[in-house]
Image 1 (tube, rainbow, N blue to C red):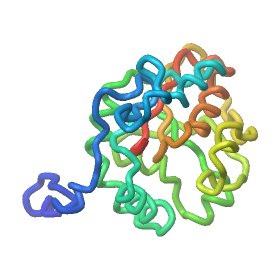
Image 2: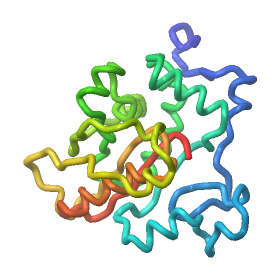
Image 3: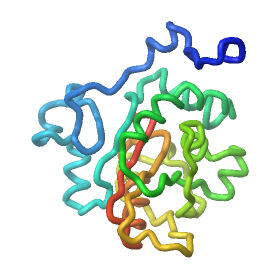
Length: 214
């Protein structure tokens, strides 16, 4: 961008690319931000999508997910460049909007969803940690992750019933603390819901999440 000359952050996506992003609009699911207008009436209960109704019945510890954009074809392409092809600079496209969103949510700790050692070696960076840092915040690492099959390779059924993949990995207490989990995509929500469950067991007062896409 031109900020080196003018000292001001400019648009990092051209108008053509920016127009392909689909901001999440209201009314959205009160728990996960999903656009309810995209769903058949049979998949909506009051102001919740059916996925969230099922999570509520399971007693999920995740109070609410906040997302910026719908996960459409262009967002899928953009995040694939970021995560899988190592185009780290793409994180800056979301930095300001993330900063604004995160600043509006009370939290003691902002926690990235961790990668396994194998996945981190493969990608060279944790996309969730990168998002937090781009927003100008300090990530707090509370969880570790065992190596597992990529979520994108799993069926919907297996995503909704995941094996245990996280462990609490810190010596300081999070009792009565408010926590925000950060990840790139909320699909079925299984990753974030499981992470929230681990943190709730350790005494966290509330757990919310922020993602780029839903």
